[in-house]
Length: 290
Ligand code: NAI
Image (cartoon, rainbow, N blue to C red):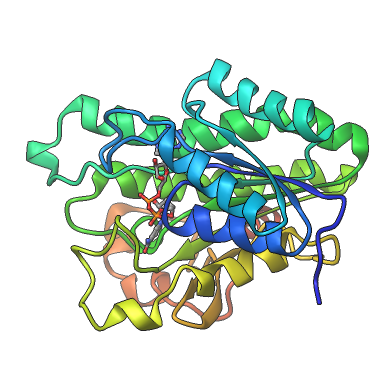
């Protein structure tokens, strides 16, 4: 059994849904958990101490160790306070699961700048800020595990989610760079693109999804990725309903000529769109151009 005794985990947005489930699972397996949640509405408005406190209390009642944090991941002070809560209560940070999220769905024409900025602030800025605040501690310890929460909407696009899709694909870039930079200090970073029945999706998913797409079926992957034994880093995994699959950004073999004109491109779409054989790194992409 993968256990987390002596490991300290920060789970953001852990007052509801997926984060709650991640926190309960890690705590049940021995981790000391900071249950962070601002406690606001789905669109990020408002705040409440209730959700974080309830989950921390439930963990303690079950015999685990947890503290609640109601700080906002989207501000530098909030992110620093979350990490400080972990240090004050448990002395260190081994694991960060950036899970806090909000939704402000609107088609592009109806989306305000505030709707765009607000969603990026929680998902992208929040994940950067909490990782940034925890990173020096992980680096000094020569060990760390970070999981960021992307989404199929970011990886593949979705109507009405220009803000959310941008944020969620941004997290893929953050994850890949954290994995590259963290490698020499024992820090591994991965992203998940989950589907689960939560308050965020209950109005969007068919009712019959509730029983199959449980948050617990996502948390199993998160636990695996943040365990000491996990060697995987820089990857993105689609996860939901009991299935886990690698999602990867790949570049096709391409088509090249010394006389590249708009007309030459227009006449060679089939070769340009080919998918096999593909390359997976910026270095291999550059080599293919030479
Ligand atoms: P949820 O609404 O149940 O949980 C999100 C939590 O984040 C809430 O408890 C909320 O209070 C908290 N939060 C929001 N802003 C915060 C802030 N500034 N600081 C601290 N906490 C904050 O939704 P769910 O479904 O559990 O979502 C968790 C993550 O998974 C989100 O990042 C979401 O975008 C992502 N996701 C969920 C999917 C699903 O199928 N449920 C699909 C794809 C991605």
